Image: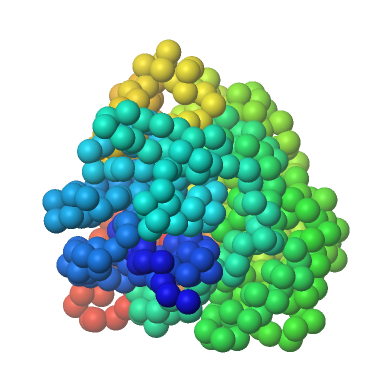
Amino acid sequence: MLSQGKVVLFYPPYDGPPLGAPLCLLTLAASLREANFDVVMIDAAIEPNYLTRIECESVDALCVGISVLTGPMIRGAIEVASIVKSHAPWLPVIFGGWHPSLLPDETLGESFVDMVVRGQGEITLVETAQALANKKSLRNIAGLSWKSNGQHTHNVDRKIESLDSLPLPAFDLTNFDAYEEIAGIRKLAYATSVGCPYACNYCTDMVFYKRRFNALSADRTVAEMIELVTRYRIEEVALLDSNFPVQLPRALQIARGIIDSGVKFKWTFQASTDFLCRMSEDEVRLLGASGVSHMGFGTESTSDSVLKLMNKRHQRVDEMYETARKAQLGGIRVTFNLIFGYPGETEADRIMTFQTMSDIGRQFANVSFSPNVFTPYPGIPIWPQLRELGVPEPKNLHEWMEMPLGANMLPWLKGNELARLQRMLKYFLLNNQIDRQQKSYSRLRYAVRFIVQTPIRWRLRSSNYSFPWELWLSNLSERIVLRRSLVTGQELPKETVNAC
């Protein structure tokens, strides 16, 4: 059968090493190929000359699809879309992914965007490509937003497709060697489900998937993971699921299936503590035995009032302790993600979170922390409140592009209050470093950390952060060790966070 045409898919550059090939493009590519389209996938993470490649590939393309996340990643999307339009103004440019789906009208307002694929895009993009190939109307394509003569049209939403009805992502298009060279590990990004049943007020997931949990069957998940790990010599599978163990029997069936296969590899996932706590100790040990090496949890705060503001009534402090304890029994590392600066949070709330998390870190060596300042992503439920509080809301792609991820856009977190929070964070992270990494220190580092450990813990308990001599001393020791390493050429022990 003759090809219906070529579709070019592009993933813009972003900060940090890639988890692997962009799964969103691989899923689109699989559905397009199944419908007899040729697909060219260009990932800026491994394609240094992606602009030249885009120009060459778009000459005879049917359309160019660009997947976009909120933040600096938009810069590369704008750059490529503008180049395509300057060389081939007739060629349709289609934006998809989280940001365009949440703000389709705003995205269509850009001169270099012709269409937006909203939400789950596999079938929508195939039908759009078929309409372009056959010069047919776009009006009946569910999930598509488009414009004609400056007028925006938003077709009806597409009914969610079961993941089991979709083909395996086109992993054969992936250059695993190139990603391994950049990341230093042969890793695979994979998803067994999308969606989360909870409705946290700061989260775009509940807006995007409307609290529907859509999962592959356990049998298909195990078969695919084993096949991919074996075929491509994968060391670690990073699950992109928003909340992997929502269906506990399914999660455990996957773990058992991996063990029964006899194939050894590491895998990681995100979850909420309540689901992990519903597992018995033996079931968590089962996860560890299957290769689970790390779990991430959106714990966010230990203040009941802040958790209520976040609409995280399912989140309990005692379950954070229990999650750490059970994960340690299973030999699994844990990261607790924290959010500070949420509207309505007081300093007393922050102090409570720092003190509780410091206590958890001291008790459980498998726990680390990832603190962040609240970021108002597009479409989240509390934007009406944020506007009333004076949070500046970007109005177009260029303004969203300038928003660094994790940047402080909060008018209530400025001046002395921001400086105090930053100092609290430094003490908290330094304390966590001391608890985690003493064995890897040089003698100088160890001596300095031993000296400052007790006063740092006192500061966290008393919330007294004036005259931060411990931070100065720790920072000085880092600089001295760095100078010595430059002279001797010895490699320094790597630390996960630079607290000072």
